[in-house]
Image (cartoon, rainbow, N blue to C red; front, side, top):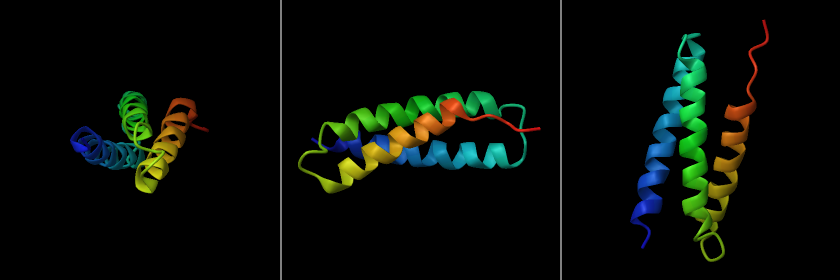
Length: 79
């Protein structure tokens, strides 16, 4: 029942970590990584949201993933 949720949790954590690393070195791929990160975070939030009413971890994860996706989508580089 939770296998998709757990898989997406791990994928989301990995892509978030990778995106932060890419951004920290000023990579020319930062924008594309943020788009991918937002997509994965939204998918994770949707999956965890299915279990949020009866699992505290899933509720917290869904909320956090939604926030991360929003930050990735609206991030602006300030020169």
